[in-house]
Structure formats: structure tokens, C-alpha cells
Length: 96
Image (cartoon, rainbow, N blue to C red; front, top):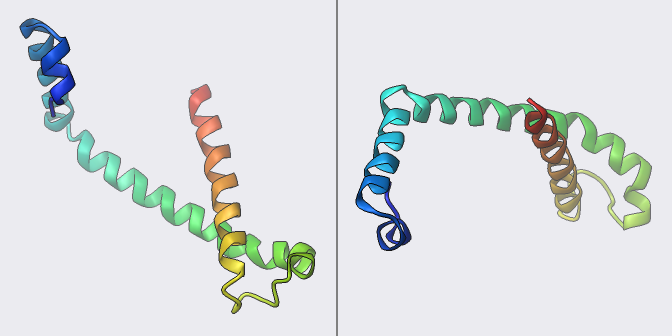
């Protein structure tokens, strides 16, 4: 994919290089591998959230005014957990 800013700011050989690079991702199957990896990672994050939300609400839920998992107010707590797990995973991948 070539963005309009790429066309405006790059020379023709640079644009050809960018297009070649992106076509390489397609030819090597990185699109499908990336989608599969993202789906697996999403399932792992959701499983971790499922396993930890009960503990979090038992520990802090009453202070936050959350009655239980069936309360819609527990959704931000789940999103907080998923954000923390996602941040930790990104930090680990940046070291590789």
C-alpha cells in the first residue's frame, strides 16, 4: 500500500522500493501469518482476562462499586486487565 504522503514526499525509486517491500510481505505470507498470530494472541489475552477478572473484582470490586461479573461496571475492569496484559506483552516483544 502506498500512501498519498509517500507519493508526495518520496522519489520514484524510493516509491518502487516501498512497493517492493510491501509485495515481499504478501509473497512471503506475512499477512496471513500476522492475522493468525494476532488471533492467537487475542485468545490468550482474553483467557488471561477471564482467569484474573474474578480475583480483581474480589479484591477491589467493592471499593469500585462493582457488585459482580454480571454487572456492566465490571467491563472497564476487564478492559484495564487486558490493557495491562497487552502492555506487558508488547514490552516483552520489544526486547526480542
